[in-house]
Image (cartoon, rainbow, N blue to C red; front, side):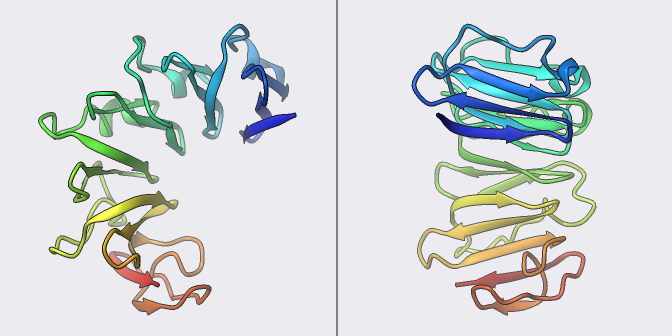
Length: 212
């Protein structure tokens, strides 16, 4: 039995429910540096690599070397990892965001806000957004499609961030409404105006939409 599953274009890995060990199948070169002897809490994949958080909060990655470069090498009690395209991000026990992988080495990390502490992070195609302890989002990266440009009003305090291809969505703490910004690939993930649950909105670059 398995409790968590992640897949690339060529391979799939899962965490065994009881032991926490990882089992993989598919394209074998992905598994050359795969870990075997640790228990893992969570697992995630990008286009060509996997990363997982051990029970002791260290991070292990395997697969494409471009996508696993510069990963954290010491135990920092890292939270659940987020991923998009060929990069990964996580938050350590001090509330600091760490990003690694091919795209992140020059554009996404380290955070330009070293003095801030964060409690959630999400990684879209070209930017990172993280919520500070007070729930206010800060973003960095190229943000070609506006996913790194969150609304900046007193009402924009978020409990959760969820990324799309070039879109970021946040769930407001007070009203429990959802606000999205950037350019949405999936229908309804970004557009103009207010959107009801399940209703699509037309995507347009740099616009926002929200849904109850």
